Image (tube, rainbow, N blue to C red):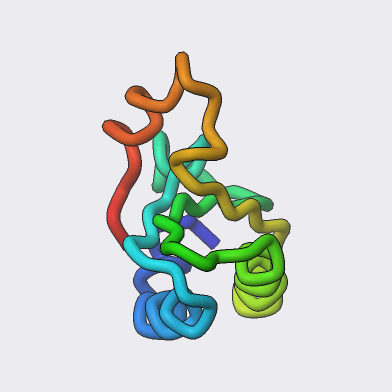
Length: 96
């Protein structure tokens, strides 16, 4: 399934999961975000963390999103991006 169609189909579920794990502002990034019409067997989401966010929150979201989409999912935060690529990734991120 095309990432844009998959995200649209599951938009409400994505937002509910992001809130459940104390995160916010989900965005699609990476190859799927750059070309949301190409088929993809993995998805990359960028989310904003909050004070108190743990790796268990990020990992829990990743597992739940993989179950939802049936493909490998990577969950990133702006602070986890390499500094020299951060601005580019943030500019190209597609809001969910």
